[in-house]
Length: 381
Image (cartoon, rainbow, N blue to C red; front, side, top):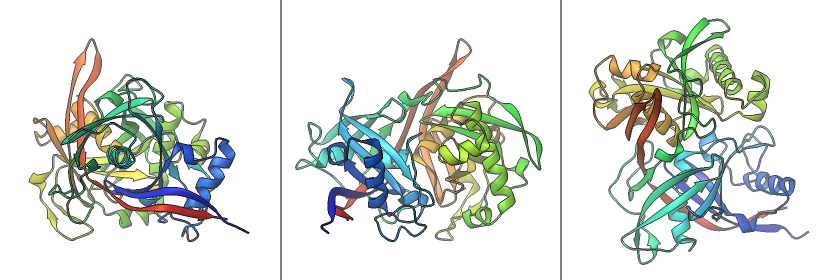
């Protein structure tokens, strides 16, 4: 029997890798579309051996790109987190790293009007209904790949892509502080009452102190991923947050139907530690605080782009647990905040102010690199 084929592009975008597909190349029927995407990725299978997925949360990501349905954007972009353990695709949030590939993809695919030396691409993220603004360097009508900008977690260097997420405050809940408070309390099994901060910028996130979990904040991914007790506690915190924002009915529903979002992170004061990928020393003076972020029930090996936006916003809101650990060493006075993650440091330019009792996100910009790895057809039976 003749195999079907679908045109795809594989891109490394930030510290993630994803499969980019044009909207017009996918079936209109939702179930047919889901079935095809799962076949393209080789899901569900923990090795994704029969598809293009990389058998890791950071390499099992989907970007669907199409003409904009809004007058204030150039393209529509839908992000999907494709599970490799279940036949599901989570569309409940966005991925900041994969977002960084949308601008270059749109330029190279001829989906936007190109100007040189820089093209501004206004991206409508359909997951959140928010607009991202990307600045892409262009030469001879194509996005520039080679450059000297380095991001932790990616070998080598590339051309810098600037992404402004300031318009993504209240991405899912409509509020930068969904509960109205910078800090709240919840009951957690095996721990008892714990303080947390729930913030919604780019994607909603729940933050807790590392010390309240009996952690230092500089644990390696493998150390946490092998600790079933801590993993259970962190998922309970995340699940509770999902219920609070209305993304799930209960903990079981959060795990089954919204496993990616909201994300949960534990934070601590700045300290010296080693990059788990290279062994290089990251000095206490190089970071404003440290954070470890959970994604799809395991520790993110670097740091999510949307997680960076939300963490940066939380750091600027007085009274949150993130602001608390940053201010413990009198850090964060500058526009640029440096977050220490397992594989290095990610920086964000962020500013916020309080107005009439409400916090407003004035700026939230990160820089990433991206490149096209391959394009062609994926064959599915």
